[in-house]
Image (tube, rainbow, N blue to C red):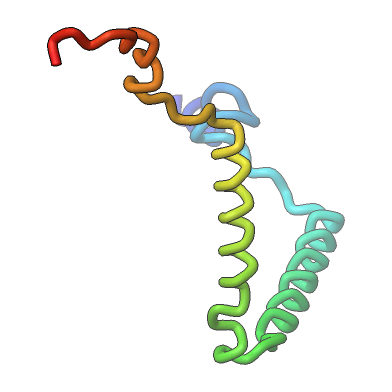
Length: 102
């Protein structure tokens, strides 16, 4: 009885490779090398991003003119697609042939 319980207790329940209580996969040498390579690339990116190309004063508002021009171009393109305004007075002007009541 105790021998059976002793031999069967280290079993992984259910499917071995999926689920909450799955068997942990071993870390291979290739996985370690890939992780080291990714961390080196990330460290290099952090190094280059830590040195700004422009100062904070130069960076503030440097693209506001270009963004305003782009917005005006988009607004002009949208209004060019829109039909011109129509007024009720222009639409019903043909009914003003005679005004006998005035």
